[in-house]
Amino acid sequence: MQIKEQLYEGKAKKVFRTDDPELLVVSYKDDATAFNGLKKGMIAGKGVINNRMSNLLMQRLEKCGIPTHFVKQLSERETVVKRVSIVPLEVIVRNIAAGSFSQRYGVKEGERLAAPTIEFSYKNDELGDPLINDHHAISLGLASADEIETIKKYAFAVNEQLKVFWAKCGVTLVDFKLEFGRLSDGTIVLADEISPDTCRFWDSSTGEKLDKDRFRRDMGGVEDAYTEIMQRLTNHL
Ligand code: TMP
Image 1 (tube, rainbow, N blue to C red):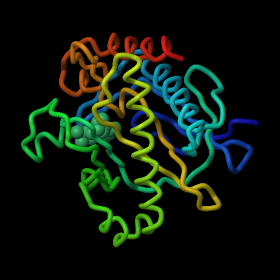
Image 2: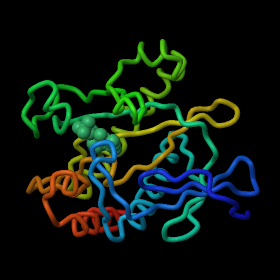
Image 3: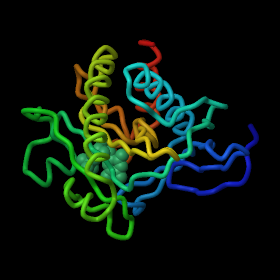
Image 4: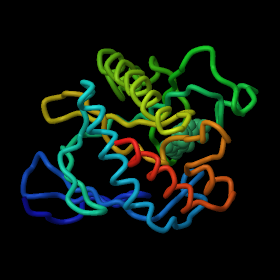
């Protein structure tokens, strides 16, 4: 397989065409943004960690019957993925109140929810990724009713698998964001990444934050947190 020209550069990754129309190569950057790109920075070594972590977790999920875009890791920062058209939804699953959920509903950060919950944001930078419900997504033509059902089923299944896995690593999976895509035949698969950029990871005993909130909230120790969470994962492979 040959890597061809860059198709797209996002906030955290670049995407390249290949000589196979069904395959793309993503390259993970160290760039970090928050608040819809308002805050910009760099987290040294993040691209290497996110690439490896996302690939390891997606391979694990595949084994549990959740289809993903993952094909093969090429290098420290580069991975071959299946070409998808992204469903323009951020799919957020939460186990514990934090971040925007805590703010919106007045629930103290750290409170365990009575049951895991799911929410959707419309991926649209100009609008600031507004929260929408599943009926809005269908009415806006972002996904069909069947696709939404599949996405919800996969998102909760990802939660069940990852919650148990991270617990073994001494990490509480607080919440996370997923993105899904359609293969050329319309099959829905998990896409984008699963990493400390897109998940909240808290040390199970101390509550220490081991994720991008350290960057979002100017807490310091960002690189160390990324290194620590990756170490926890590799200790339990
Ligand atoms: P929130 O509490 O800020 O809505 O974030 C929920 C989860 O989604 C959290 O794990 C961080 C992740 N997330 C992203 O991956 N990308 C984003 O743009 C936002 C706002 C959150």
